Image (cartoon, rainbow, N blue to C red):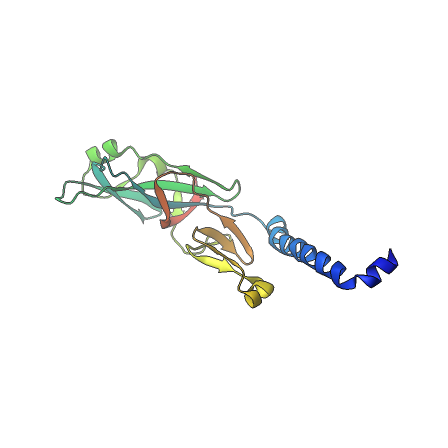
Length: 195
């Protein structure tokens, strides 16, 4: 065995070095996430939903006032009707899941059209609109990439068009769970500090 290694040293190095690099990159990507604390606060955001057959009856505008999520509705009745509607979403970094918060548009529009009202579905939440969450995460995206030392030399690396929550070297990808939605047009609303 020793003779084989001596005689074929270049071959042995050529086979083991790529495997060693794969293990090294895997450890560098996984260990910080395992050792770190996942995001403790849900992130609220909106995404655009396109329906080319049926335009929405109402257009929604979300904003935060006094740590409460408000929504303003207006009738979608212009000459050039908008076929884009907004969906309200929440990302939970602890479970790495996204859920839609269904808004009763008819009820909201019926209450006060054109004026901002506190959204019934989120009235018990306190929302912080800071760019950095209370536990230190920020929203990163939509185009981030990495190449590392070796990838930088050889033109390798990756590009990602999705969003993620990032703190130091730890990143949590926000999954796209909805069809016909465009996560690269995500609008950040805030962090849920109280439910």
